[in-house]
Length: 314
Image (cartoon, rainbow, N blue to C red; front, side, top):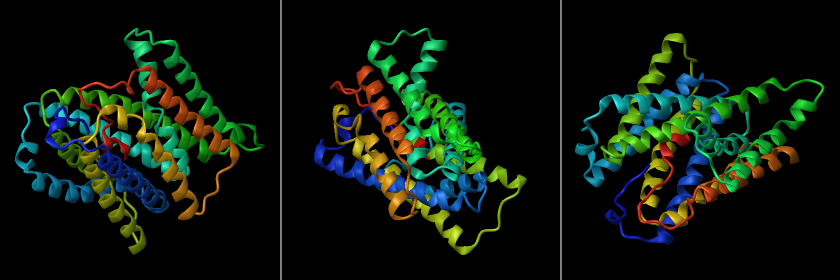
């Protein structure tokens, strides 16, 4: 989520860090719930319940902020539709990755978004990034190779791992496009409007997939999907509040600490123990993303507020 009005909340870096930490923990918990629910439900069903249930916390938050009326007004509905469809695609790819990979690995691959954005800019916009950014891109690719190394050298290709990694990379690439659309929308529409339209369009996209068949949910899976939706909505609200209370130099790289919580959920709740190659690759990808962010100047103090859109975290 982005907003250009940092003054709408009092600047409180300590509160911002606590809010951001809570949001990252909640998002990791949401991904853990999706990881388990994906064993039963197809991806479209996951997207629907994640999106429709998340509307509750988001609408309640907008009502409490007095922003509900402005959230349903827009001069560019077609742009919201495009952003919503892109966001739904990001969510679908993310959930496919979570179905085949651990929460930690899927989270690490999602950090390829800024790296792929640079590659797209070089290919289509003829941009020439500096040496630090290029080094970050190369480092990110190395991290993916490290994650895949055991599968590539094994006697049998682990197809599930490759599907998960491919979905994760597709998610990061689509997320890069989605962030561009969000940035364009923030020039004309308030963040509340973008958040609401994303949840609504994603719910509709997920509902359409019912035509291709949904799974019959048991009580445990249904509970996981409801929990994922509530956690996703709460995480969105908390991150929105966090980014309104701190300068960009403080939170620019803080999102990457989410990998810590993802690994903890893998181990503590799901009982997943990653091998040294997977952990090394994840750490390298995170370092690469931070390197790219540094090379782009995201850690430089500047008055205009920019932050990652939390709705694209899945």
